[in-house]
Length: 573
Image (cartoon, rainbow, N blue to C red; front, side, top):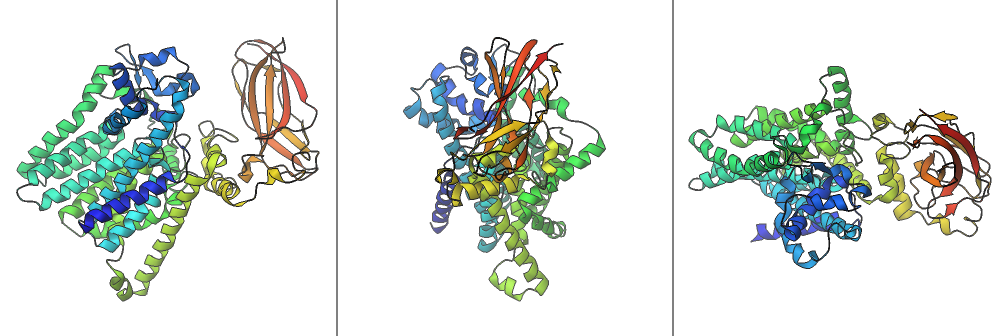
């Protein structure tokens, strides 16, 4: 009964923390997953054909849908998370099922529900992690590692904030480990535990195809350990993997599913792979050991595992090897940075294994810490410092607001310039820290008497060719002169409301507005200062004569009082 109360407390505590930021940090990746249950219950169909007739996909989620080979519109992402969350969404359908899910006004409901579902799964991961760690470590080790896993890794900023596939992967992986350890110690119920473990193992690639690495490693390991009981594990595996096979074959006529179109993004060049490998582990804005340095101490547990022949030790060693293989796999993936996210999103899949290893390395109790050598005490103290830093980094990412999220595309999209992850001057953690300070601590300077009336500026030295090819991406530069008596804040400051940008309007020959785009002021500008503005803009796709207008603009305030600069250019083939 005490153990159950502990699990409930961990679930409620982590769920509350995950929901406490009050914002949605998701992406269009999860649209198909979050619409799947309501779509099936409302229309009694599994396709998304109705979404063709709406403007929903034009709102930024178009890449989440794909024309399947059965000629129906479907989600390109794996189906596992949608299956896992279907029961909870079915319960919510009683309350919100009357809403038309293709209507734009439903988007707010979809995001709110998705955030709750993600926090729910992440909180369940924390509970299962604690239950698993308690099977082979002391309460102190398990408790400390659970705190690190739940709050000091990307489980907070990624797994709990939106229905990406990473929290469900950890849920399935940890549940598999729990069932395997219980099965290895059980007598009469061993067959049941191994069958359940097999279902979890088979379902992992249904959630995320790259998790096949964990499934394959576990199958190979158990084939030499379970003997006749391995048959029941394999039967469970077949049950778990069946939904993914059936879905992929029905929709795509292949086993790879919607991700089969991404196979060309894997490259076989070794030198770039080494650079990506370093980026995944130690880059300032995507490195696992930069965002979660406490996991460095997990590596110290590998020596202990190598010297042990216990089932638990060998199983964890197998999963550690699979985790290393997964990092190596992503090193050959040309979009390894994981899109618009906070930190190493792809490596969220391995933090559960890393935290279990950390639990083994930690002192068994306070007495063991006190009796240890000075090296042991120093290493433990360093681990505590790393854990506090890791939790702080995750707190910053989860609570920094819009200015922190903007790092992924301001001043350049990370997808266009992935080398930004090595920028020390404007790292993602630093920008988010500044944004958190502006959001939570600093007084709202935009309300200061005379601040808004003192905002004046002018755009000069705008670099743009007079003839441009249709639809090309341009990298213009400009200079903003602060002609007022109020300080101007650029993107590096972490300010959102009040941040000064350069509004770029493109008008056609008839004077009609064609598009509005932005350049971003790099530095804070004192009165009289000249600040550079950079970014990307896209030329019109239709040939003809155009006029570009550029003027300073403060977010949440409006255009700065100044003359508007303009220049003519031509789009021609």
